[in-house]
Image (tube, rainbow, N blue to C red; front, side):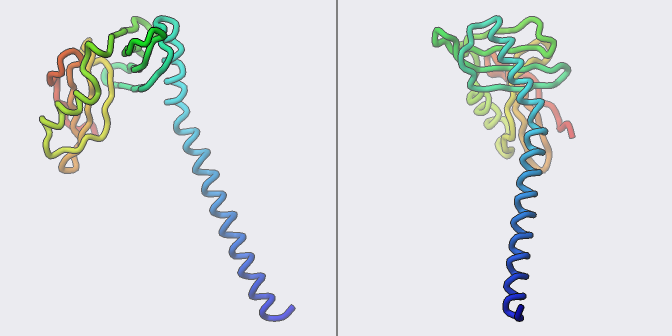
Length: 167
């Protein structure tokens, strides 16, 4: 084997090693993502199943996982009759709340309220749940390297509470 053939083999070996390393990184990243997202998927599946037992919900457009004093799972979707509904489910699975979406404040309306209150802050996340026995949109913002939480009333869009960073 001459010098040129050895050099060519070395290049092929290096290329093969890089491909194997890249594929390994992709595989382990995929496995990590699947395992990390499993609780969210499972909670969503269980919430949908529970909602279907109490409401004729056919399609789920949004799923929210809300935790303050207690944990709530919320679904926004459509019934068999074409009615848009919001279902709020306590983690215990008891006392589901069902609302007609057209009568309530939407996620976009809650976003607008907070954008007007927090002009210099960027909205990071919006979640629907219960706080002090009141249905609220929790809007998390970031400004000046601080997180803020605005709780917006689901019924009328008023500011219920502003919480400082939870970090």
